[in-house]
Length: 345
Image 1 (cartoon, one colour):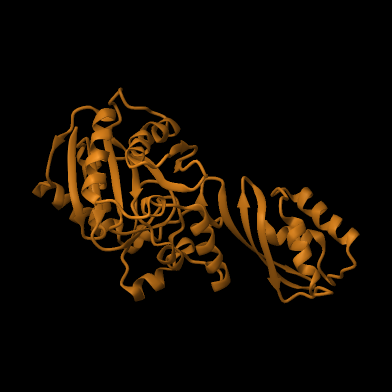
Image 2 (cartoon, rainbow, N blue to C red; image 1 turned 45 degrees about the vertical axis):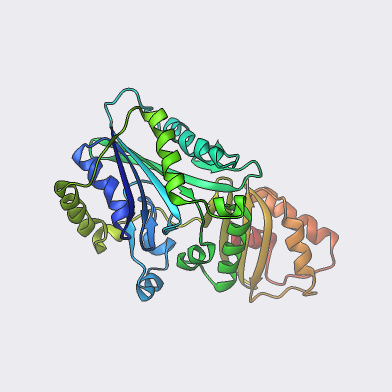
């Protein structure tokens, strides 16, 4: 296999490399960082639902849909990406996606370990610290006759920029996204107190991957590869490809097991909005707002507290609200426990 140690490439070029190599049937490891920031959107996502495309255009922030799964994310020069490309018939590599994620994570986990950061693979595709904070994510898929697995080393991460590019219902929810990211994500800078030299990170990462993949032969981007990248850029950034129908948004995934879920439901008594933090399919925090009536108004905070710990199941959510109403002297005219449940879900 080849090793393409590419340093920093302008924005989208850093993502176009593995697309081109896969279509050309060139097996290799790419280590690269974007010179300038960009937004990368997962293949199965609905781009317009996940990302504030108008903001990105106004800010001059390029965006593209990639041909592997995972969520929308903000990429910049403080992240070191690894991209492994191999032909599907190469028998020494795993076949099932779940096995691929576990297998490829070992190089990143060992790299973090060399810098004194304990990390481990967590199903489905995260790498986390012992405290459960996500320090890397991974994605994968098939392109042409090849399989591709991608991931990144977070030397640092701009949570504010990430929360700004996402499409969210209101600024209050955006603040919640930022706060939850800060609580559930970490970086080398955060763990070590400073950002290590990039060349040291790249050197160690290359060594760990060579142990995993076998001998790697240094290579450069040839004219045929850059020509293919230019050809693919026209397609991958086209309006037709960007607007292809993807999976509807289901909130914002922060890490495996933690997501933010925004809900809205029109009840006879008014519009109900909910912003919930969901951990392992249970509510860990929730804010309820809208134009309905709740008396006394101070009681709404009690309902929010009572919903913490509730599983995301229709009957059990309704029972939680029923239990609260049975114990507290409150009124929700025109709003039933089913309405609260529908807003959450």
